[in-house]
Structures are given as structure tokens and as C-alpha cells.
View 1 (tube, rainbow, N blue to C red):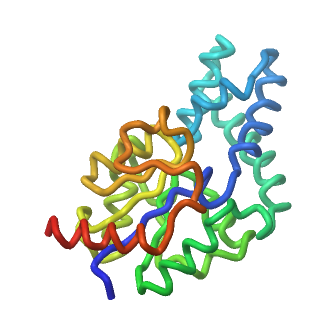
View 2: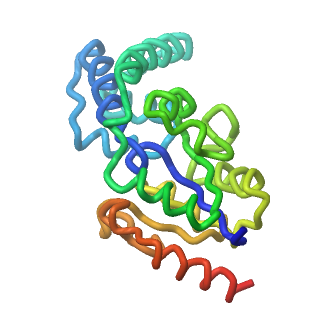
Length: 223
């Protein structure tokens, strides 16, 4: 087996649940009496649920008690889960399934490293759960990205050193976390936004078997 492992973020890389987060947060903002736009939603990418609520409340200039915050976190998640339970394999993003096939063919194992506490459910909904050798989600970590904890635990699940891992991420916080973990970072999405990544692609259709093999060579050369 190649001494290289891959860690995938979930939202925006394997599936796009950002649209469902947006709808659920928008419902909450409407309830609180202010507008929450898609531009606002960009600020919530890659951050924890609690931090997302704090950002949303700052946008609306709303102050709440800790008790109310917990209440709204629960209600937001319930709305989000309603959308998630309607998901199916057709919502897997372009190139993701083919890339997993390529990694399987090359004998490269992969884990999930996501801030989402619903990651296992989402993977089950799109029939990908059994393909990952491990899942590190919001239930497994105490520190949110850009802290590298989620990816360092991912490396442990792969039984590899951080320097042997490749991370696919679509958020600035995720790229910063991967870089802090001394892993190879690949930004999926806007190149300008994810300029700190080691490599950039628009989506996973751009990742070829040849590219993965070049990463293996790169990592083995560095060892």
C-alpha cells in the first residue's frame, strides 16, 4: 500500500450541503427579524455551528442569552436535518465518486475530516459511508478549523504521519488547518479565495490518477 493518505472535507468537496445550511440559517434570521444573504453565508464556511450562530447574530446585531442560543442551535439543526434526510447519491459533487474509485485502484485509503456533526448521516444518505476508513467530525474534536486537530486525528486514523497526508478543502479555515498540520493542501473552488493552498482545482473532475501519483512521488521524496 502506498504510504500516502487522503483526508476529505465534506461540504463543498464531496457534497454541497452549504445550500441547506444557508436555508436553515436564513429561516432563523427571518425569525429574528433581519436579512441573511448568500454573501453573509460565505462567512460561515468551514466554521463550527456555535461560531456560525455568533457570526449570524453579529450580522443581525442581535444579542441573546446563552439559553436562547442553545434553543436556536437546536431548532436550526432540526430544519437542516429535514433537508438532509431528502438527500441522495445524485447530490454527490462532480468528480468525487471517480476520485474515490481512483484512490481505491491505487490502494490509497481516505478519511473524512469535517466540522459537521451530521457527517456520518450525510455520507449514509449518499451511499458513501462504507467507503471511508474513518470519519472525524464535529463530535470528535474540541477545536474547530483553522486549528489542525481534525486533520491530525484523521492522520492517526490513517496510521500515517501528517506529512504523508493530502487534504481536499473548499474553505479558507480548512486550508489554514491543513497547512498548520503540515499536510499537502488542495483547494477546491475559487483559486483566489484559496490562494494559500499548495494546489488549486475548480472541482474534483480535475484530479487525475497521474496527479495522485505525482503527489505520492512528492511525499516519498520529502520523507
